[in-house]
Image (cartoon, rainbow, N blue to C red; front, side, top):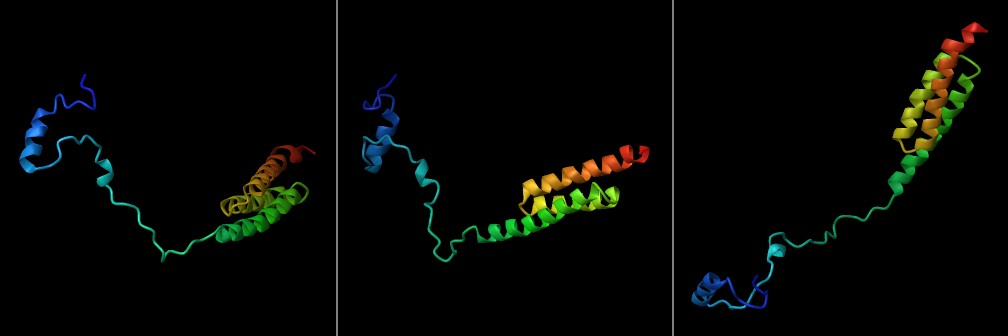
Length: 122
């Protein structure tokens, strides 16, 4: 195997380089020249997570509402309020309040199951 410092195996390159006048002893990668360098875009504003904070705050309010409706559905109108709690839970999860939304969905589903299968026997 040829050593990197030796020029064995590159005789055809030497003839071309001598003819064109380029240096004889180069062996480097040129892949960095394929892609253009990154440029800094000063016109694009730097944004923080302000929009995300507003979205989570909106989702938190809907999530609390969904959770209250789902808990209320355990005692009054389980099918109707359970469905409303599930729908609002999905909306809350989409807006960023995943824990509140998941709890509302779970309690709404439990309320519907209890209302359909268990409550008629009492």
